[in-house]
Length: 163
Image (cartoon, rainbow, N blue to C red):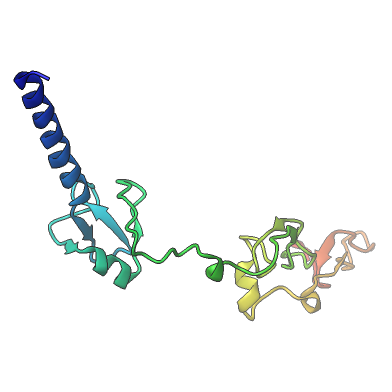
């Protein structure tokens, strides 16, 4: 090898070492309200963000940002480990919720509580629709001017709008 080749080889090796040390020495930041860690170039990082070390990331249990995609720190315990997964198989079932008419909802759901997105509040609230509050359809039955009975359909045995 000639001295010029050795010099260019050493410069290339030095450049690679400098670049690789910069990649590994990236700064991570945590926003005040966040549960994720970010790179310094991320748009989510502001002046009020806190600079973190690798140990801080694992201490706070932070997850990487999906926008800037920082490298995953090896010391972080994986939040998607087998110990944290739900037990059982996710099945799609019919929603257990009741509609305003009092019939069972027809939506399919794979949520663990058995209710679809529209009826999740019925699971915990006391104002769910029950079969005791069904409305019965009947006719008005009031006397008309001609002497007959009104045949308009009404709810809960009330009279129609004219009577």
